[in-house]
Image 1 (cartoon, rainbow, N blue to C red):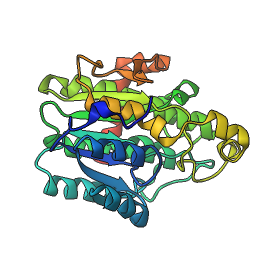
Image 2: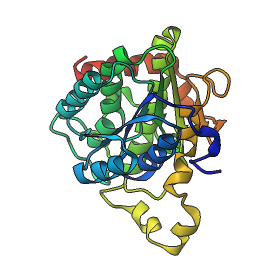
Image 3: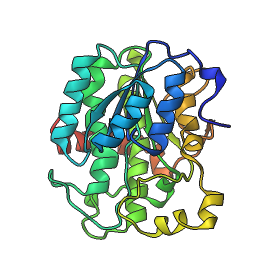
Image 4: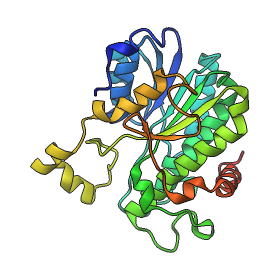
Length: 282
């Protein structure tokens, strides 16, 4: 199974697809496949050079944004809204795993802001452009099973452990998907989350144990290519909500998958939405 399949050819002709984290890895691979499906691509990346290179190759429009800065996220939303009257697919794919606890200029724990708060803010700011039939796709992870949302310590201030914190943000991606669907599904928006698999990418840019795996012969055998990791994203972007996938759901390898137990707590999902709105100033 590969990300670029003949079945996608032309099925997104003229549709606007926004992909964050598109300068490398899963995002760039998904962009390549969706360009072949006829999509009008808006590619968002942190690196101006890498984002421009991918966009140039695919005849897409590049946008530069660092999700560790809310002012840049707000500017991105303004730029996208000014350029596009409608956005058909928003793929919230940007993310990172930080080995050490860091605080952003906005005062939030880095992994929490980049993986959850920034896409939450971007999605809400773009809601006027996400009309009937639009899809919001969250790149989550099975690492969510290592995480737990603690209302009293939402930003891991008491104890920071890289993988559990990363896993918690991936759990929050699913909770956000659930609540986004509950709040806006009745107007035709479809939200969905997916696990891409363990992929050789650059998201772990602050080093740590994952890089030890990436740089070994064993890593070459067990890690997926970015194109393989992008496959479910491409499928969700080109399939029919309600027929091929269930809005509000969580998928892996194009199939429904079981999320972490807390992901089914709808009261927690509603609480996280309200708390996140406070933290980003909505």
